[in-house]
Amino acid sequence: MTDLLLRGGILINEGDRSEQDILIRNGRIENIGPSLSPSVNCKELDVSGKWILPGLIDDQVHFREPGLTHKACIHTESQAAVAGGVTTYFEMPNVSPPTLDMERIEEKCAIAKRDSIANYAFFLGASNENLEAVKSADPEKIAGVKVFMGSSTGNMLVDEETVLEGIFRNSPTIIATHCEDTPMILANEEQAKIKYGEEVPFSEHGNIRSREACLKSSSMAVELAKRENAKLHVLHITTEEELGLFEAGHSRITAEACVHHLWFEDQSYTTLGSLIKCNPAIKKASDRDAIRGAVNDGRISILATDHAPHTWEEKQGTYFNAPSGLPLIQHTLLLMLEMCEQNCFSPEIIVERACHAPARLFQVEERGYLREGYWADIVVVDPTGKTQVKDSQLFSKCGWSPFSQMTFTNSIETTIVSGKIAYHQGALNMDCRGLRAEFPKERR
Image: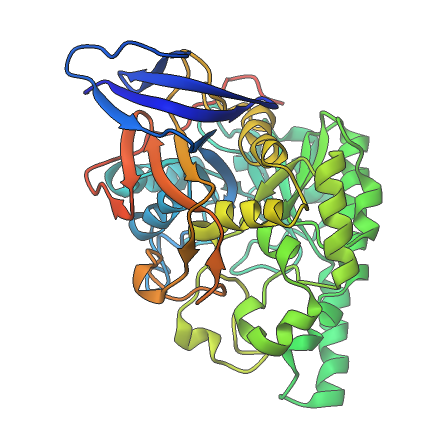
C-alpha cells in the first residue's frame, strides 16, 4: 500500500483544532505533526485550509441486503456513505430473511467483504422467538443487539414482556432499541381512518406515531435497563419529553438523534409529504430545537442517520401505502455542518457525537479518532466549498434525496477508508474495500 501524506490541514479532533500533517502507512496513521517529511514514493495531498476530521461512524443504517435489493444494497449504499464522509457503518437486521442468528451475520459480512467500500458491522436482531440466539451471540462479531420495541417489518417486533426481560438480562453486548408503543399507534391509526378515510394527510404522521407512544416505550426500555443493569442505547429520539430520561455522561443508558429529526419539523410535511415519512415521526419545531439543545449538553450522545431508502415509486403511495424511511447518508455530514453554519452546533461537537462517541459506546477498536497507530479513517472537508444536491450525482440506488436542489455551504473533498482513498473530488475508488469493524470480547 502506497504511503499517503495529508499536508497542511486543520485537524478537528478530541475537542481541539490544530494545523497538522498526517502520514498514513499500511492503512494506519503513522504520524501526526507539523511539517512531516514524506517517505519514498509517498503520495501527497495538499489540504491546506481544509478541515481534517475522523471518518464518521454511522451506527444506524438500513442497506436492504439481502432480500430488499430493489431499494438498495451494500455496494451502492456504501458508495453513498463514503461520498458523505461515513467510513464505518452498522447495518440493521430487518432485511429478508431477518438477521436473527450468527449464521445470518456471517452471510452479510461475506457480502460486505466483497462489495462494501466502507468499513462495516451488523446488528443481531431480536424477536419474540430467538432469545437463545441472543444469549449465545458472539460479542466480538456483532455491533450490538437491536430490539424493535415498536412496529417493524417481518417478525421483529418484540412485545412479550418476559422476552424483553430475558434480552435485557442476558444480552452479551449493548442493546439498541427502536421505541414506539404499537397498541397506541394502532389506535391512533383507527382514529385517523375515521376522520380522513384512506386519504390521511402526511402531516398527521407525528400524531399517529405520537409523542405519547414514543415516551411510553422509551420509558419502558430505560426502566428495564436499570432493573437488569443492561447497557442500553435508545435510537432516534424525537420528543422533548423523552430527553428527561437521559443524563449527560451516563455510561450505560444513552440516546441518539438522527439528522432528519434535527433538521425537519412538522411544517416540512407541507412540501415534502411522504418523502420525510419515517418512524419514529418528525414532530414539532419545539421538539427539534430541544433535541438540538440536548446534542450540545450531552444528553444526546450520538448523531446518526437511520438511512432507510425506498424507491421513488414506493414513496408515491398514499399515507398507509407509502413506506417509512428516507435516504440520508450521502449528506449527513454536510447537513450537520450546515447546522454549524446556523450556530446550532460547533464542528467539535459534531466530531464528538458522530465519530468519537460511537467508537467509545460500541467499543470499536482503533477507529473514530485521529490518533497515531489507529486505522486511517479520515474525511477532508472544504469549509468554503459548496455542494448542490443533484439527483444525477446521488450514489444511493433509489436515486432521490429529500435535499434535492439544496445547496450546502460545505463540501466533502476526500474520504479515506482504512488508509485507502475511497472518494476524492466527486469520484469513487471502486476498487476500495472496507474492513470489518472489530470489537473486544467483553463488552457488556
